[in-house]
Amino acid sequence: MHKIQPVILAGGTGSRLWPLSRELYPKQLLQLTGDSSLLQTTVRRVAALSGVLPPVVVVGEEHRFITRSQIDALGLARNCTILLEPVGRNTAPAISGAVEFGARDDDQVIFLVLPADHLIQDSDRFAAAVEEAAALAADGFVVTFGIEPSKPETGYGYIERADGCKVRSFKEKPDLATAREYLASGNYFWNSGMFAFSGRTFREEMAIHAPEIQAAMARAVELGAWDGRFFRFDSQAMSEAPSDSIDYVLMEKTDRAAVVATDLGWSDIGSWQALWEVSDKDSDGNVLQGDVLVEGSHNCLIRAGDTLVAAVGLEDMLVVETSDAVLVAPLSRSQEVKKIVARLKRDRREEFKVHRTAYRPWGSYTVLEQQPRYQIKRITVSPGEKLSLQMHHHRHEHWVIVTGTARITNGEETFLLHENQSTYIPAGVQHRLENPGVIDLEMIEVQNGSYLGEDDIVRFDDDYGRQK
Image (cartoon, rainbow, N blue to C red; front, side, top):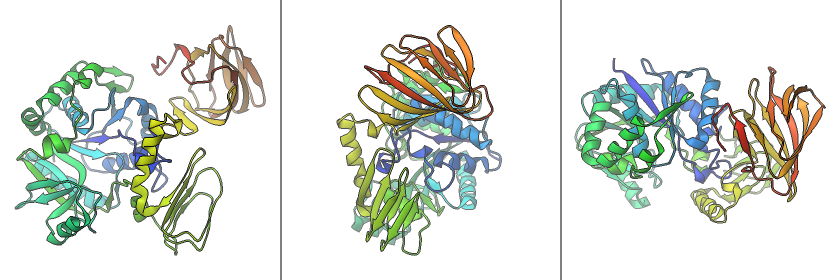
């Protein structure tokens, strides 16, 4: 039995699934195909494998608390390690850092690298493919998982297989005519972005093909530090690693690449059309979620988040409604959503970055109304959690408790507030909100002032190590 170390890559934003996916609440954290997020489904999948070590999850700094919260909610992987990327440097440095971290005691361990945001519908075939890949990895191969194509897909890269299990070449995303040729040949497979290799093999190959990345990430681990349950790569060292994909720096260059070809019911859910293809549909071919009414509409994906969405006579259309944005497009052009996201970023609009509901290590807040000199929020604090001891230079706050019990620090006073009770906090006064109870604390906060930005926070004490 091979010792297998799962490594789950949970970075990225999935901009093609905007407006549901945002920079600070990316695709892997969304519930797209069931009651669990894609990240949670991936953690469950590896936990079901026999003989695997607790997973290592690589995540961006800004997503660390919601990632930890989602993993803890499963009750399956409390021993997992979360590695923090202080800077985003693509998949090669992320994987290299995970290997340097995990292979310090045993470089014969088999690393199973999986994206956090992919759908795999056949768990039994996945387990069999992992077993096959682990055996090849133990023999010194760098293994990739090739998905048997079901159609001439132009949105995926391809793997060309040579004799046996060896890889002959990797192909970029083809045009339709070339994709049809690949499908007809029977020797090309979709590149899934999943890998298996021993720590020793990976280090040897990276030393040949990407020594700068390997050296930088070795330093990033050596100089890194624990922050509670998180291990943070050293920022300066990681910044020196070239930002490249593992396909480019290693898989396309090594002569030790092998492919395990399989059919897993796999999708990277890289677009709204891809989500429509893998989702359950009604008798008219529609995928509907939320408060949606349709008449005479066929082959559509319609999601309602905060309000009723009604559609009449739509064909092959995409409609996604959230609290602050509505997307309407032909399903066939859903890949072009990333152009809208690029414009939002260029214009410095908040809609590319956050939802009106923002998640924090202590809970969440939702912006109910926002005007030039006042803002109304609904704040939810999880049981046993508390916000930082803080103050604001430019805003005053009125707090009204809706549900639960709050322990309030307001200047020199500390006291309890219950449902329908309130307090007022002037600008410049240190304050703190805590939930000492066993149910969620919900509060309405009314902010008044000349500046209401989230960066007007001075923290004096914080349980989560945040400085700003």
